[in-house]
Image (tube, rainbow, N blue to C red; front, side, top):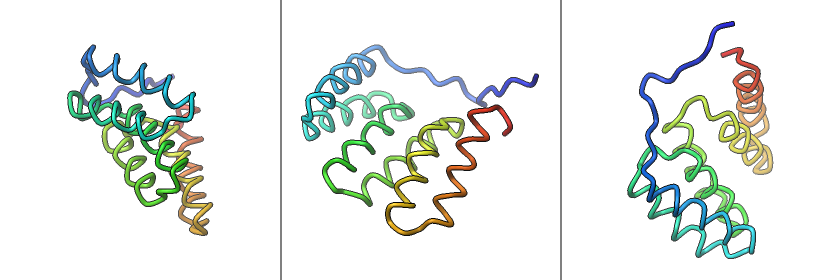
Length: 118
């Protein structure tokens, strides 16, 4: 079985992880603006922190900022092209916006990545 290894190892600074963990707590409490503030700090310190960008997308969705959410999911994918959840969430967002052909392609990509087919 072939293992997918990114070209560059993603290194996340400990401070970014701390911001991300605290942001998750605020997200779970429904404090989306505060969550975004903390995540912005996390990605400022670690610009390739794909999970932080993905959570930013969730926050933007909760706040009704659909275009921001799409951009943040795209940033997560750019930071880590193997981040299957970011592909999936972006696809779902596109489907909700009526862009189903494009959305379904991204969801298929997410499924393929999840099962190691890409």
